[in-house]
Length: 569
Image (cartoon, rainbow, N blue to C red; front, side, top):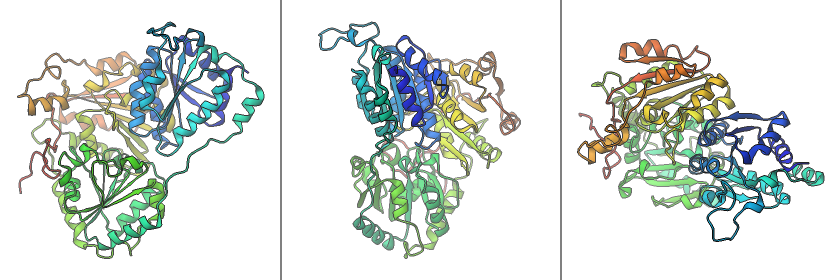
């Protein structure tokens, strides 16, 4: 059997049946085999970066239980995948990246030359630091064992991307039927996960027993744990407050004891909770500078800190914990059920105090703007409450506006570009999410971010997916402009001076997508009311000229609970 046919059979056997690609000469054998199998959903994109993000979207919606393929040809096709590979690496998303390569006889090998074959490029070395495993297949006998190893690693432990670089002559070589059958019947080698020790549980129980003002912080490493929601339901019933990081916020359902997102652009009540608790239990968060602020020594200033993480290298990295536990979030939630005897000294006024802080923070931070971001997202919350929907956010002020104000219910999720923070993430990722979920998807983007992968509006129209794109158009690269206002006396090179954006309404219509433009607050309710019942692609452009601030925010060097602007007492 031809090797590319064998690859297709292997992937189908392991339920990897969605591929995003941009065709090129060095992947034609692979694409033909996937197509001829009749069991692959092949989605042709207009850029390999978009293909990478779309594959990430499939895995994100499936909470890391389903893997998709992103494929690019040799040379520029391979390098165009890199930003998407990095996004999967930093946010721990399992994806299989496959690149075509020139024939093995055309590889430069150890010669002291730059290139031998046309579009030859050593993508394995380029991608090695951003993947769990990257390998070139130099002999056809290595194809199936390396594919088995790569897919196993992608799904094991702290999940992430893997890459196989397959030369063109290897793709069309023969694989023996007996070898294929062997690998089709060999289960994936999913690695074992670290578990809690008896000693960890004993120390944790002691710390919880002593605590009067405990707080739980849910990070991105916990967001896909099957047991997370029931564990947080128990916390809510017991009156134990919890907050989240940006990535944790993706799956945390709004409840009475949830006090929203911490960090530099976090909610005021969440940051205050961190700074005033006496025990902070952090599950699956790496506690980077965006979460803690620059003053590490002041973070959780009154608290003992417990950090739970699957990656032992993340423990005691920036923040020195009183108790570090190397375990998966899932095993932690199951081994440490929240019961009435856990927090015996709980101060009953703690939750009441936090609730007052939250109520006080509900005021409109943007009363001086024609269109208030916080009001906009409150209307989205109400209009889409209890409707299955995935929000996908790009990067910029609009991302932080959404993170501060979106409140998700059952059957809803949000998806953020976390560690990579890639503009252009939302539209292609949403395509993958929509293909996997078959539910409504709402993209939150800005004028800068949407232009990076705007060509995928054509893909959206071709697929006819149920997707609404909300473009918050302030005609400026607002987040960086805000930095310039703070640190460069308002000099706005390349954020306003030298920057431009088009009419996205007109562009969407040119792609065959229904589009509406909102210019004032009076028009918002009518246009947003279209979203719940609308089927298919829809674009809503909201004009927000010169809206360049995110409120509240943390200036560099300030303490976590000293956000700007300060509230009047």
